[in-house]
Image (tube, rainbow, N blue to C red):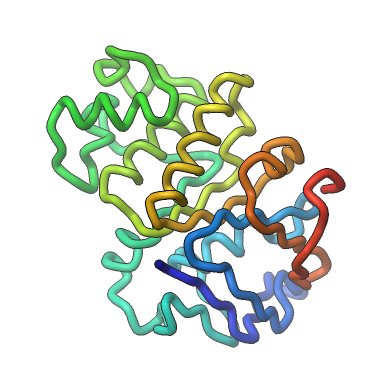
Length: 216
C-alpha cells in the first residue's frame, strides 16, 4: 500500500512561506484530510505530491522513493490529482473519462455511477457541465487509470448532499481496496465522515491530530 512522506519540505511564493521544513507521513491505506484557513497552501501541498509543483528544498517520497526520481507521467498514473476547478480536455464526457485509459462503454458508465452521475451522462457535452459535474467527471477520469493514491481538492465544495454522500462512499471503497486518499476540505462534516486522520496546515506548519469537528 502506498505511503507518502514529506521530508523537511519548504516552499515559498515570493516573500511568502507556504511550507516551512514540513515533516509528515500520509499513512498507506488510509484517508488523510488536510484542513486549515483559506490561503494556507493546502492546494499547493496536494500539487507537490504528484509534481505539479516542486519544493524549494526537502523531498517528497512515495513508498520510500523520491518522487523527483520517478518518471512524472508514471507518477501521475499512480497518484491522481482531482483539482477543485478541473480542466476538461475533450468534447464529450465519455471521451473525457477515456483520456488516460481506453475503457469500454460499460466501464465508463460504472465510473460515472461511482462518482454519482446518472445513466446516460456519458453522452453529455463537457462544455455544458456545471462545476460540480465537471469535477466529478475529472474524478471518473482519474479513476479510469486505477491510481493507487487519490488527491482530492475540495471534492464536495460544489455538490449537494446526495452527491457528497456518493463521493464519501467512493473514498471509503478506494481505501478498503488498498488505496490511499489525501484530501483538502473546508467541510468538517465530510472530513469527520471519511477521514482516518487529519492534519492542519497553517502559517507554513503542518500538524497532526486536529479534531474533525473543530476545523477552520
